[in-house]
Structures are given as structure tokens and as C-alpha cells.
Length: 104
Image (cartoon, rainbow, N blue to C red):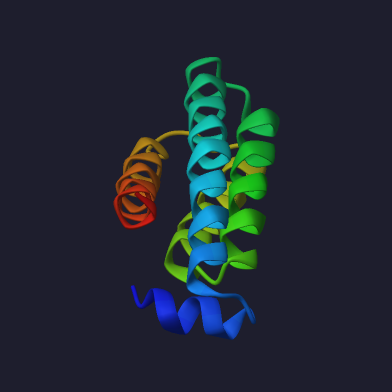
């Protein structure tokens, strides 16, 4: 992940972009926790909304790998199929952890 390129693509200084990444880590963690809770409760609608939120936030910051994973989770939840979505959640968490490392 090239921070200079990502920040430049958004017309931001690297330091400003890093601040946005820090905010994303906080909100993204909340979205992933909500997604986990929704799956545990078998609430596909809530899971789709949490994945949608994460998808938008990550896309806005140019984190397209993370956004695509969130999109896949959202589409699966919208279809009402939560079985096996845990793998996507684990992948989302791993990618968000990578972002957290970069932002710190």
C-alpha cells in the first residue's frame, strides 16, 4: 500500500491522509464488530448495513481491496446467506489491521 500515491490520488497531504486512516480504523472496527454481532444473531439486514458502511468508507479512501471484500460481504448478506461469511469478516479484519499498522 503506497501512502504517497493514495494520498496524492485524493489531493491530500500524507499526514492528512494518515489522520483519515486513523479515523477509518476506529469506525471500521465498529463496523466489523457490528457485522460479527449481526452474523451471531443471524440478522442479515444488519450485517449488510455494516458491510455497506465499511465498503463506502474504504472506497472513499482508495482502499479498494478492503472495499471489495466489504462489498462481497454486503452482497452475501443481502442475499440472506450468512453461512460462511466469517471468512470474509476475518479477511476484512486482517486488512483493517494492515491499515492500522500503516496509520500508527
